[in-house]
Image (cartoon, rainbow, N blue to C red):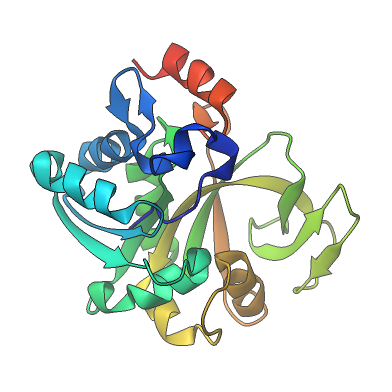
Length: 235
């Protein structure tokens, strides 16, 4: 699943007239680049959630025949549901699947997704989260076995510890998940909510692992200046 329903307010003025999913990096939209990234790792069936200028995204997918991928749309035109609500609305798409990948449309990376999927299948946690050692304001906290144990906002000092650990390690989440189909049955939240809330809720009773891709390129293309950075890396 590609999360593409956000308003993209950090990418104004582009997003006053367009969805952020269609912002261009060296002539290719973020959506196209993520579809092609998933193809590199053997994924050719994708569901994309849409809200802001949803018609433009649908038109681009149709015009380009999904860039070679079978693309389904999850329509959130009536109300944007955030990451958790968006996944819950699209849960029907993953019925019968052991695992599936979720990625934010504004993330560009060359991380080894195949290795991350392999780790998920070997260890069988309820989800594996891509993380790295980089500076941000909000961190997931993991114990010494790379198991999710909490969350911290270093700007506000807010912290949630959900699993006891002798020592906690801060890791920045990269907006890429490999999720067990079993997780979908455990989501208790309704309406509009974040996957962060889902993970912190489930981490008390289930193993949620991390996949550390420190060293790989990863750019959050959320601001105009980050497009310039991305164009230097993703040709």
